[in-house]
Amino acid sequence: MEKILIDPTNETPKVVLDKDNNKFEISGNSLPEDVNSFYTPILSWFDEYTSSPNSKTEVVLNFEYYNTSSSKMILKILEKFKEIHRKGFDVEIQWHYMDDDEDMIEAGEDYSEHVKVPFKFISHQRPNN
Image (cartoon, rainbow, N blue to C red; front, side, top):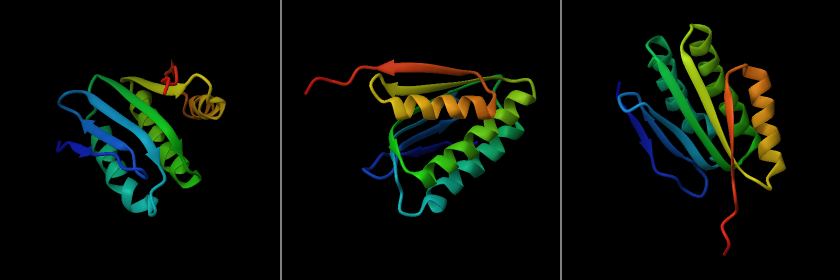
């Protein structure tokens, strides 16, 4: 499978989808002007991955901020992992958040309850500036 590597901008997250090295990460801000054009290739990649996943899939989701339209795409991505998990493969979502960001903690908990895939919540301290 062709890997996807997207560098982050102020509006779009860093994306690493690399099946060969078992590295799956989406991190940063997600507020693209056109959420469909940004996330459609990512969803298509996961459609292909779902047909032949690695035996263990660990996904790092480390959002600083995302808008409502991005949240719908994040849910669609998480639904792909639900499908993989349902097929009997080992899946873990690593949901990163700043320890004082209650909205991001709640969002991760909501996603976790919805997709019923193992979530690992990882708290970070805000750097002192």
